[in-house]
Every structure is written in C-alpha cells, then in structure tokens.
Length: 199
Image 1 (cartoon, rainbow, N blue to C red):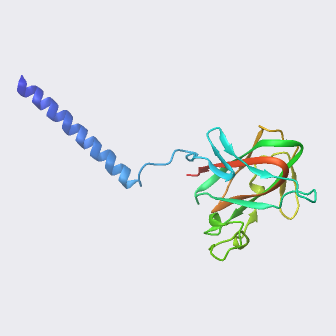
Image 2: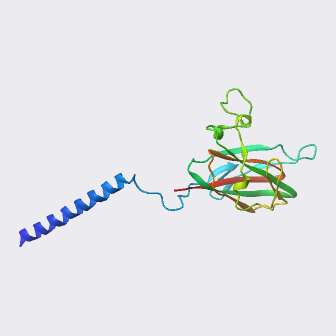
Image 3: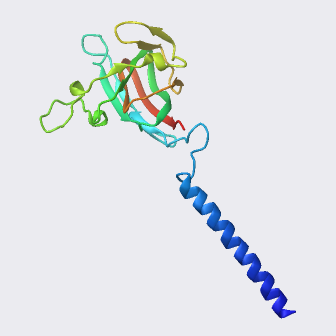
C-alpha cells in the first residue's frame, strides 16, 4: 500500500513538471506575457506643478504689471513610444473672479523633448526653442470649454472656480513627448497626464 501511494505521488509530480514545462515553453515561444487588451495604465505624470495624492503644488499664473497675462510657458512630459491614449487632468487650486487659463496641446517626435527647459543656458543640451512641437489638438476626444482654431489650437477656460478639474482625452497618439503651452491670469493650476499603451 505504501508503494502504491509513492507511485501515485510520483505520477502527479511528473505530470505537474511536464505541464509546467509546456506552459513555460509556450510563454517563451510567444514572446512572454501579453499586455492586456487596451494596454496598461501608468502612474500619472506631472505636467504643470505637482500632485501627490491629494497634495498639490500648483503653478501661479498672475496678471502682469501691464494688466496682461503671464507669458506662455511650455511644460513637456515624455510618454513612451507605445502610448496610444493620454488623459490630461487640469486642476485649479486658486482663482479670482477674473481668472482664466489658456493652453495649447503639443506633441514632439524629438528624442530629447522631455529635457526641454524654459532657460536659454548653453549648459542645457536642449532648450524649449530647440524642440519641434506640433499642434496635436486634432487628437482631442473632448475639450475643456471651447476651442478657438488659430495657427495653433487654443483651449480657453474662462473664470475657472477653485477646486475644479477638467479632463482632456487624446487618442491615437504617436509622439515621444506631449506638452501643454500654458498661460493665464489670477489663477493657480496643476496638471497631470495618465497614459495607456496600445497592444
């Protein structure tokens, strides 16, 4: 009887080893584990200011001494070359009754677009003026408020309330970086992007 149980255990272990070997060889032959349909969501990336959990560190857009808006600044973020979809969330921390926020959505194929800065120092390998940005508003699935078509598409958010957020969904992307070129007045804003990869 003891020999019978040893034989049964041996057969079960042998079957498990054979099945495991077959599954492993199929996984290796097929290039590893497949990405689930629709891609995998990544961790949100900061674009304007920072957001960690519920704590934000927004960028302040002020009225200038001449009564105009702050100068436009480009905020780039690198996305993987396999990224097909990006959801940009724009949040307002503070705003006066006359606040506004204006942004253009840009994309770049340049390999070092994510290192762009707003400085013109010779020590920077890439500065914001060196990057070739293109208008990617055609990839928008929705808009913040209204779209004004000019040389570069502009999204205008007039009189945003503190504590509000808006989402922009970009579809069918094929860029190394995306960026928000933003300006505004009397408001403090943060923005982040969540990307998804295609199969």
